[in-house]
Image 1 (cartoon, rainbow, N blue to C red):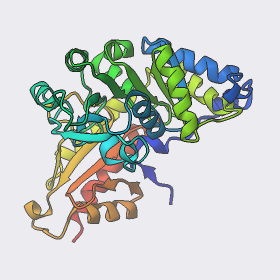
Image 2: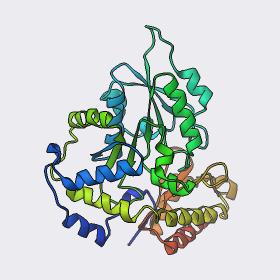
Image 3: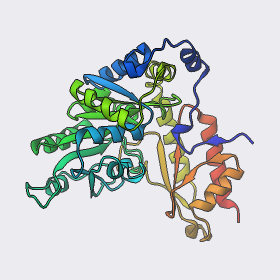
Length: 355
């Protein structure tokens, strides 16, 4: 069976044109700083986000960990949301590798953290307390329905942190989704943060890699941290070329993913027993569609997200349930078209009608 894969935008595969760019890439030894394709990718990304320099890393998690290692030291504290990817899905690396203490604050539904809560959480200068060194934000915010967070909030949060001598790192894994949804340049969202990590291997469609950006001094220090975590790659231009192709060809087309997600969300909301939580008007949606499964409301209390995920697979649709909750997530991407969306909606309706 050929599946329609809505589990994540990480499942994208390089197009023929992207593969051609990879095959023809000019390469060198990146650890010596001699891979021209890597250097070009780093410069392109830094320019797009309005920063001085960039650093190619193997993954988004590596980029976030390298940023934390660079900004903070052992025993320092970072503030971040309770639904942040860095807190939930990165293997405890901030504590295990960086020795940085996470101070968890409540995420609002739109992915932000209340500014008063941030202010209250910042530690006073006292020998008993860790030093509040870093504020970590996320845009788009994955677990908050893929919400795009605007520049006004990011500016205010960054200015608050800076007023207390803290640095700000932005997990911008899907930053270009946010920029497209908000109708702004990516640099408008990053203008007041100290570092940002952007994934190439999600909606942009590259097979691997992320870029961490910041000041030249920050990136010089981050290069050492990348070495410490084993992130030095040699003739990495072969994969960096895919990133360059993605930046040149796949940013504006993210609007298609957002349109497909909106169509999918509307279809889900029209099915009894399902309710879409990511496109409810309380946030600016992108390509992530979160919805709740309520089997009891249609007389089938045994039907939960796990069972629905299994039934969808039988209909040729791959989608993830979220642990023990009754939430599910579907993600649109470059490999999904309008016909796939209609098939997914039909499969959802059929799966809920099954006894």
